[in-house]
Image (cartoon, rainbow, N blue to C red; front, side, top):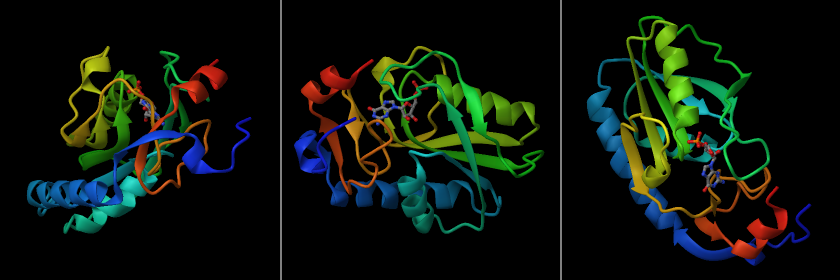
Length: 188
Ligand code: 5GP
């Protein structure tokens, strides 16, 4: 277990401040408002990392929509993708003939997003798009479109604003890069 209860001790440096995040949510909310006008989409939050982003970005999305959640996992408690994706908690809504917008925290290899998009398409959705806060584009191993995103990030492990380290530290209000020594100590 991580010994430190002090969140500042695990952060190497801040990458995005609360203001930066607010601006991204505002910009994305405007785009989504235009693109989803009159469509009454189902907005699907990818658990658990996307919950902070979901609640902020949808408050800037001036479109009637329904909310649902999907928890699929390829990571476990580690840092590298296991390459296998499985459903932990399924959707409760019927997505047939609906416009579905997946809200993700970060797209890395793309495996998780590809799995979710394929699953929802197979169930007969009219359209399936994704709005991610962060896009680690250079790490992609599978071809999948991130239709909207807040910012690109490099190959660094980020935490805060929903993004976890060993399922902790999601409540850090900004996004920071985890100290390399913490990763080295706890990486499996
Ligand atoms: P993918 O299937 O695209 O490789 O993995 C996506 C998931 O990996 C994300 O939803 C997130 O849970 C996790 N992930 C990828 N990169 C990071 C990162 O830098 N920080 C954290 N906390 N999680 C990450």
